[in-house]
Length: 90
Figure (cartoon, helix red, strand yellow):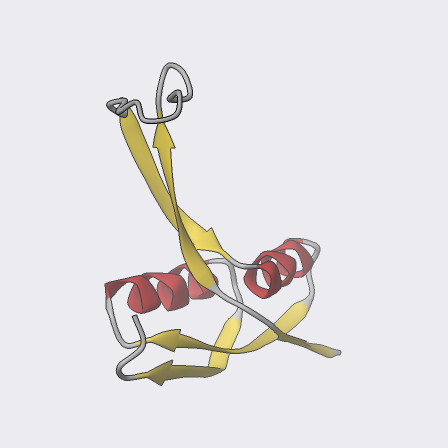
């Protein structure tokens, strides 16, 4: 059975630091991570990990983050044929 998931997709950028900054304080990060995010994408990945045949329906921008999001969805086994790539979206 095919499962269609309609939803948001984005790329999460997370910084690692020793402590949270206080208001107005600048803190250097010791590292960072970039990965797939968004409510719809997260739900689709969870169902795919359970063995579901997932087709994700959504949109991404025509930029490096959009390309990364589609690539990572495919690596998780999601069918991305219904993901639109839209120009002019940042």
